[in-house]
Length: 245
Image (tube, rainbow, N blue to C red; front, side, top):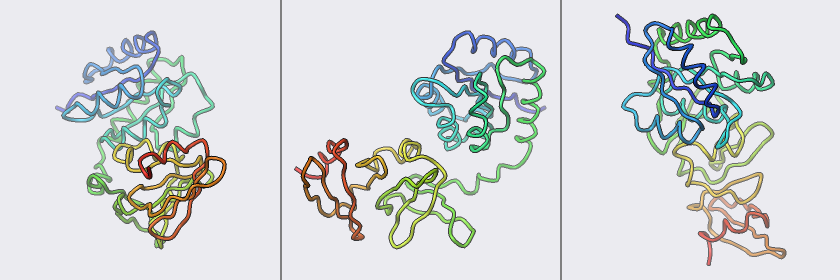
């Protein structure tokens, strides 16, 4: 007999959670769903579990972080399947960019939910391909120029730079591209606290800052261990506090 499917529901609207709870209660072989009202609560809940949920049913527009950002963080914590449950059709492209299995547009029927759960069960019946590639703490898998994958140490990254819909991870003399925003990368578990955002377009690893030069107008210039110089904009000058007196 297969184990009951475990589900995490994340939605800031109590009425939406209640309706989804009611729909899920009619599904056989389903454990009572876990619930959270926002992204921080969901992450804290999953962090305290011995085993991550099989499925996360996520709203998209919520306080404390969007469902799309939350989906990436939950995947890093071992949640294999993501399904979005939202009233906003315009976010569908973003949802599938984070490999969501389905996109339920509110209000949906019990039959539509059952179809999404069938896709989840089908996915869970397959071996988890990423299990062998789980990076240890302080490391990350990146796409290498040769077309394969390479594991890098986060401590060796000197700076991160926004590049349209990507972030360039600079590890001189090499760099790697990640499809994400700079804010999403900086919010990842294990990345937060390792980098300081000093400009709307880039963040630095303080361990690689070798010199801080003050400029006029409240700006500054950082020189990194690889020789790269990055400007600190005036709006981020408070970030200099841990770097220089």
